[in-house]
Length: 88
Image 1 (spheres, helix red, strand yellow):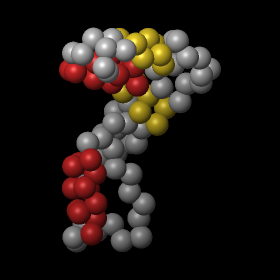
Image 2 (cartoon, rainbow, N blue to C red):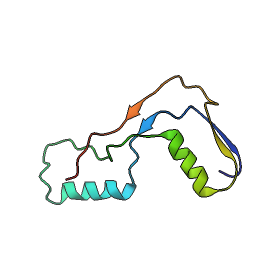
Image 3 (cartoon, one colour):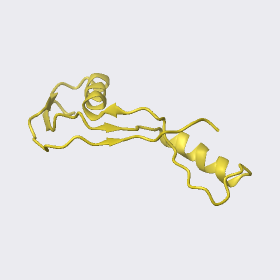
């Protein structure tokens, strides 16, 4: 981000990116009367976004030069981590 190149995997791994305030609101909802006693809750957006898309967006927003280098590091794996969630 400081004008450096960023070697990374292909970045095709999908993650469910959620803002910390959204997690906090979900936690508060579960402890202040929401009917979830004894249930496991998964807080998320339900949308998988690739790591490379997030890295490219961060570089674009910061605008400090440098660039991500997808594929410079080979991990050989593709993992999807996303919740199937619904608004409560």
